Amino acid sequence: QKRVKGVQIHRPFIYGSTAKLFSEDNPKPPGTPPDHTHSWTVFVKGVDDTDITYWCKKVQFKLHESIPNPMRMIDDVQPGGAFEVHETGWGEFEITIKIYYVPESLEKPQTLYHHLRLHPYGQTEEEKEVMRKGPDIRSWIYEEQLFNEPYNEFYDILTSP
Ligand code: SLL
Image (tube, rainbow, N blue to C red):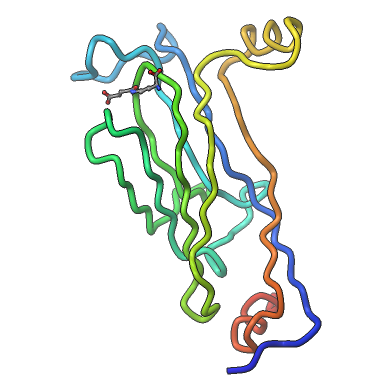
């Protein structure tokens, strides 16, 4: 196995969270603890739902310790192509996201941090007001995965259509 010299491959993806207050439109599932106010999803996915499984093998989400079973290893994507965890709760916290690459990459996993947002946020009152009126609270980050001088076998996987 040899690295392909002088080559950098970029693959866009999105990570982040979407949260929704419980309401008539978004009823509490049976058995949800009474202090939970929101349902939320944290995810890693391709841009416009494009497939990322040819380079991303699985994703581990480390949730707050107050949540049962906080380490969630997700090795299958949802129909939209996202590695995701769906939960309910009452508070915001930092989520550690660990991305594992396909074995052919011979790359070590990489860690990202995401602040779960449940409440309207933004620099200005206007920004918050827009979010307050919206259907959910999104905190989505557009990111580019960079593979610097990938191994030849992985290079072939990355570049085959
Ligand atoms: C806070 N630093 O104090 C944060 C911690 C923890 C949120 C928030 C529990 C969910 C469950 C939950 O929402 N924890 O019990 O399953 O605001």
